[in-house]
Length: 178
Image: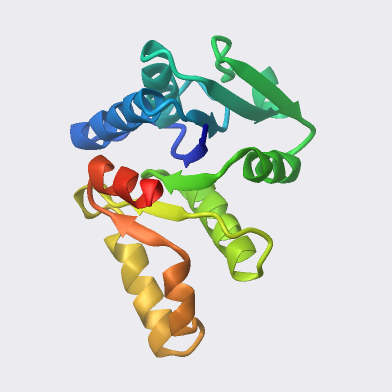
């Protein structure tokens, strides 16, 4: 069994297609008998993807820091829930529990998780696949930044191969299955 870590927002998007993508991703992870690892929340995109995997009889593993659990955003219906002392420990445990990473649209926290796991791969801390799920061009601005950083020589061209970009759930899953 593979464990796929899903990074995504704790808020619901305005665009219905982004919400539908989270639901489809959760369902497809469960259909492949992969476990899903995520931030342990019941709200926003996090709740959508977790509930979808659970409704499809998937295993969903949440990792949440105590301060967020106390704020009553924790999902109580998960297969397994890990509680950590802080965000740093949370991200390290999520990496340990996962075989690959999928990044759905989200805000600062989602980007923080993406950049940290990407940096860890660049530094050789892990060699696990990372896929940005670029629904409706959500990450186009990020890719523009990557290209600008590349042209300024802040990023080496080989580093752009550390992650992949998919436009659909099907394309993302094909990348993970390879």
